Structures are given as C-alpha cells and as structure tokens.
Image (cartoon, rainbow, N blue to C red; front, side, top):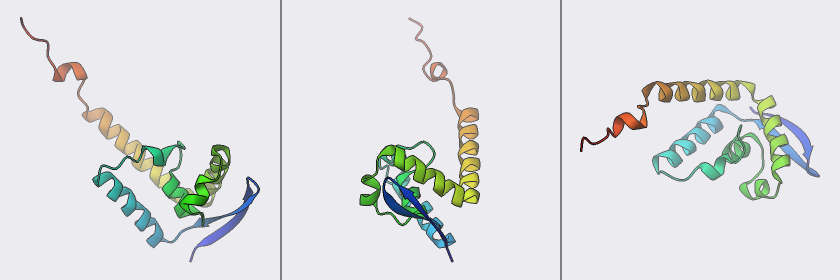
Length: 119
C-alpha cells in the first residue's frame, strides 16, 4: 500500500507518493532497459538529484504534466519526493557513490593508454 501527500506547486496540486516495491522494481528495470539500449538518458537527468522517471514514479504526474512545470517547480517536487521516500534516496546515493568509487579506482590515465611514439 502506498502513502500519499498532497502539495501545492506552481498553482497546481501534486500528489507525491511512496510507491510500492513493485513500482520501484519497474522503474529500475526501465533505467536498465534505457542503459542497455544505449538510449540518451541525459535529458532524463536535467535535475541533479532526481530524474524525470523518478518524478513520475514518486508522483501521480504524467510525462506531459511534468513537462508543463518550470524547473524551479520541479525542484520543489523533487524535494518532496525525497522527503517522502528517504530510504530509496539514501540507497540510491550509496549505489551512485559506490559506482563513482569503483570508476575512480579502475580508470587508467589517458596518457598511459596512448604512449608517445619513439620517432
């Protein structure tokens, strides 16, 4: 059972939810599908802390409704999504931090991959 919270943003009422585990699995599967298909997900991350797909998952807003908000309003919606779903966003931060740490320890310097020629 999901929890809901009504907020007023940009002159509209938005319902922020704590989605079910099944809804979270579906969202994660969608991210994985986008990544596997090499789709450009940059546009989905205009906001630093949250993606448009996450806003759709954590609210009752459609993609079209999200597109009608200005960025400042979406930032407020994002804050409310994070407040209502602290466990998910704490987990997400841990996963992203671990991924960045892994990349940092497994990258080779650009100059070592292209040694200078000995002409």
